[in-house]
Amino acid sequence: MIDLSIHGLKPTGKVYANLPAAALVEMALRRHEGELTARGALVANTGKLTGRSPKDKYIVAEPGGKDSIWWGPVNQPMEPAVFSRLFDKTRAYLQNRDLFVFDGWACADPRYRLPVRVISEKAWHSLFSRCLLLQPAPADLAGFKPELTIFNAAGLKVNPARDGTRSDVFIVLNLDHGQVIIGGTEYAGEIKKSVFSYLNYLMPRWNVFPMHCSANIGPDGDSALLFGLSGTGKTTLSADPLRRLIGDDEHGWSEHGIFNFEGGCYAKTIRLSPQGESQIYNAIRFGCVLENVVLDPATRIPDYDSARFTENTRAAYPVDFIENAEPSGCGGHPSTILFLTCDAFGVLPPLSRLSEPQALYHFLSGYTAKVAGTETGVTEPQATFSTCFGAPFLPLPPARYAEMLLDRLRVRNAQVWLVNTGWTGGAYGQGSRIKLAHTRGLVRAALEGNLAKAKLIPDAVFGVGIPEACPGIPSDLLQPRRTWTSPEEYDKRAQHLAGLFQENFQKFAAGVSVEVRQAGPK
Image (cartoon, rainbow, N blue to C red; front, side, top):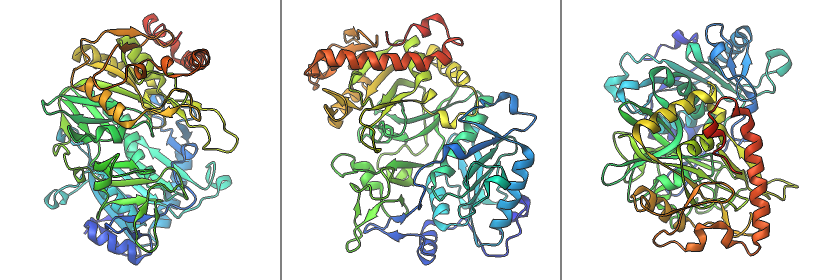
């Protein structure tokens, strides 16, 4: 019942449009795209590529909009003529196969709702899209007109020399025409992040601040935002049994409040346990998609501790699979904002208050650290700076998003906290990971206002305000220097990280105030 000719497609195979989850699971199993866990989740293997391919992402340099794009390594330009040829090749590939179509919405607030169509050759990619996008009621599908269409030709391999790409993988966004083409990769996260990148381009036009953050609501209706890069704890900390989950990764902040861009969650599952992350663990059931998770061949029980295929094992599931999810996907203006970082150097405090200039400095910095030992020859933690906590998904210059944050901080007077979910007592390999129970306790204290009147002690290097005490938290943990057996070694590591912050921030220095420039580590 769907006419794909509006997309230049005249399929010779069958078209399966907007199938329910059960039918998509059946199709995926019949087509040998995956297998079932003991609890009914579908497990798919993405093959060689188990994560995003940022070096293979392009934006079409259309004459009307190219002057507004933040060009560089993140946003590589592709000429319209090159895109046109690649688009034709993608459509030619797809129309000779059976296709799966999912029509859904991005943006939980109906005032900003975006109709999205995903056309794919894999049944499990359609199920993934069904998990991550908002699902319209059957009546709403009549006359559905997509404003963003994603063409996922996972099995198409192109010739870089002939097709104008870096490799045989491509992710190309034609922002002005609402089109995305994906090929050469089965990693489903490319679908999700293509939608997010498009919203990061579109939403500022509507005076909506797009954010790479999770969000939840407390029992008194107080909303909170948790910014952070992958692996810092956005999904884990936002799935709090004492608070209603709005969403785990992508949100907008409008004049009316905050709202989820998505209809589902995309959680990392490596070392997942029912004791540590019970809500996420219980959400993984029939209707959920697991990526690259190892199964016991006899019991079909997932081995979440195994990284046989990748550390980046994932689960995609509708947000209402979380027991206490907020059904509207919306919340009021946030009173608390948390910046999450996983500091593998072990020198940042587990919780610290940020002034307004410090908030802008850390937002533009977007710091976390790669853990040492995950790559051959890497023996030290590696700092990673991703501006606005989401550089790979920002089509516009970072200053545009920083201005939107600043405007809202000034109007709403929200408290901003920096949360280190990484190491204490030493760097990775020497110290230990901060206990999740302690991080949860600190986060809850900040969210519930228990630290509003706490005495703040400025950190000697990073300048942030460390609470003198927090109920239920060891006092020495709050001051990271006290947890190291060698304070001199701590000082050395702290100065090293401060230097990395300063070096990274040089590219923003000319575009910010003196107060923001001086708000960084000394």
